[in-house]
Image (cartoon, rainbow, N blue to C red; front, side, top):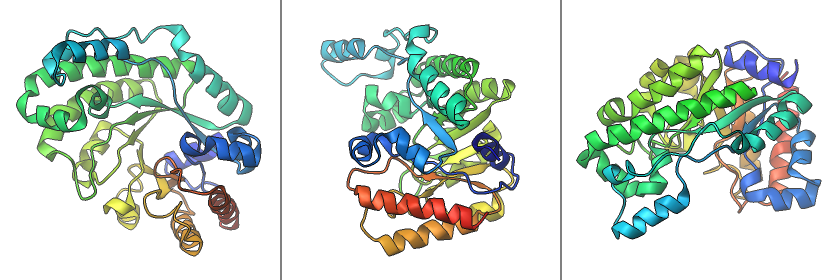
Length: 325
């Protein structure tokens, strides 16, 4: 199978010739990877990555406008305040240059499956409000937030559809909801205030026949049924270190959605425990040798990971997926 075909086979709940692999390595380790391998792209080629996470595109708000508003108010921005800040035009062609180049490199040049990061509803506004304030606003200003979220959702939908037009294989919605043991807010709040505005983008993407994935750190078990209802094909990272059990996923949800993850950056890679790291890599890959998993880091590999350990991990991953094929 070609890389893109392998990933699509897994998302469609089929058995691949081997487990597809990828890793979020660039953000913290680009300089060290470049010194050791020549470039991040050379690292990705060396380990024959099957898919690629694309970043870029327009921002919804001009950061300078948000900073001016915060200075004028002399206090944290509240939902009603934000409604006075215009959103950026999501249709500016120049803002998509980086995404176009990444599609050209990964999909056209390497045959990889490509997915693009797009904003969620809650996470996207934490930079404007501050996460603690935002959590408080869910209780205090629900009606104002609905209007803020509606505007965000409509912008998200346009951004996602523009990326589909450019040729992405999957729209990846990033929206952290989880803490270590459960949601940061109640399931009822999620269903009333978050879910309806995810639906706007989800329905648009599904109408276009494109795959849809969700990123949320932490434990989101309480709303997995809602995630399925929204039509998500892939969930990342299904975080074991936050109490989400991959065995339970395999038994209960494997034919409903696919997990992207399996290499936990919170407990597994970057801690110098090479025997444990190797055991965890093999445990997870063996569990999903017949499908159900896009093997990937649970988040960006952190900067405390040495290049030697990174090399060790991906040497092992590269070998094991081929041993199991």
